[in-house]
Length: 347
Ligand code: KG4
Ligand code: ZN
Image 1 (cartoon, rainbow, N blue to C red):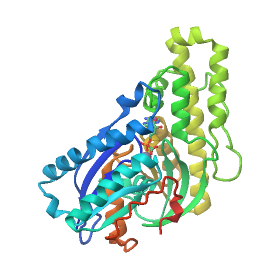
Image 2 (image 1 turned 90 degrees about the horizontal axis):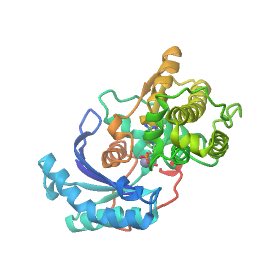
Image 3 (image 1 turned 135 degrees about the vertical axis):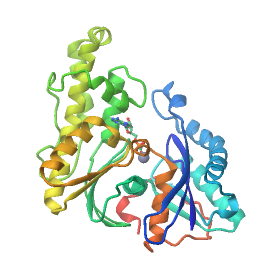
Image 4 (image 1 turned 30 degrees about the vertical axis):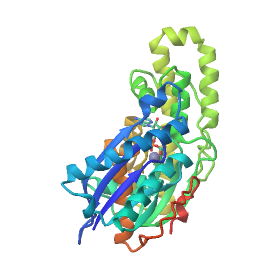
């Protein structure tokens, strides 16, 4: 079975084709991606209407590109999967509208996929896929969650952020440091030259005894600290900026690390999966690797280029759901998107 996947929940248009296999995880045949980051950079963040319009422009050329790279035609597609939510309503509607129209024209069924389930299952696209059960740390621009994952579609929420997501904390702090949107990768590059103990920043909810996170206070602390240093000094002095970047990253990483270790201890599981854009962060990976090695825990990440949004993870999640009997693709082309949709309600 060949499944086309379309991702359009935010500022990346992604399309991919996967093929199910008899005794193995589905195989990625081809994928193509267009990032809108440059377009949104002028505004310092995602402009939803511009995002929707750009998805409209990109999705069909990307689909043609994927089919040609895979050496397949539209007639080879058995199911059209799309991101149903969560995300920007207008952006989601583009993906679901195109998916439903394409599937109806081909007389094939559609399947709406949860965006975070795509992230969660994206390590299965790597050469060293995890085995169930595992603890998942989902760290993206919009979500920060710890889940217990017992199988495809079997997700129990252990804890999540009560305000900003980890990616948002990176992006908002980076903005205060004068870095362009999205600031996560830039802040982490700057942090490599800085001293992570230069400034004392809060580690919110570190000792709360649960698995929840809170990052909203961190950006306020970064703002206060940058005012103390002085905007002029920060602008002109790269080492001061690097120190503040390193201290911010250290605060975010320490909380993610400690809570992940507590979740592993609480569940007794020996496997951790890290997914979502912040999962590309080098310091987070290094510290998780070290802590997991100490505890005899295997840690899995998606390949670096599949950490941020892409179509491959949506096609993969759809194929895995169909293979596991968790979802039945349908010929009801309802394109009812779910801009808000808890991950433990995908069954
Ligand atoms: O998963 P994703 O592509 O989109 C959402 O579903 O939200 O994650 C994007 C987020 C952004 O906040 C971005 O700044 C962050 O991931 N990010 C990083 C890095 N690469 C991407 N944050 C820290 N370090 C990185 N290397
Ligand atoms: Zn995402």
